Image 1 (cartoon, helix red, strand yellow):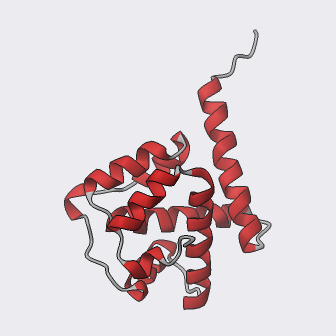
Image 2 (image 1 turned 90 degrees about the vertical axis):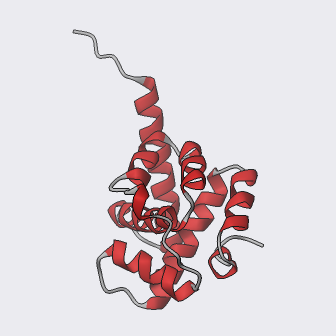
Amino acid sequence: MQRTEVKVIETTVQKTNFWLKELSEHMGWSDQHLSYIALRAVLHALRDRLPIEVVAKLGAQLPMLIRGIYYEGWVPAHTPIKVHRLEDFLSLVANYLGNDLLFSEIAQLTKNVFIVMENHLTEGEIDHLKKVLPGPITSFFSP
């Protein structure tokens, strides 16, 4: 029996692995599972902070597999969470991480996820996120 591949699935797996590898390199990690956990935590915190229509616009820009991670467990009726201070956003990330990292480690991890997003999303989408997020949170993006 001949093996056939579903190209769209192969492509999204490759793109997802590329994002995870890039995040691992930024963090100095050899374990990409850590990058998966970090990416998921930051995306969930971001998703829960954004208005519903912005959640959908961002989701449409993500590779299919990462999009599934992004929407996993989302309850639109509970969003957006009113988070304005950077410390509160990082606490939200920490809740999704579910471990006891130092505040500075969570900040660095979040910054690196934002860098990976900037490397792969359109400039227009990043600009839109900068407009809807509070200034302290947008500090993770490049100026």
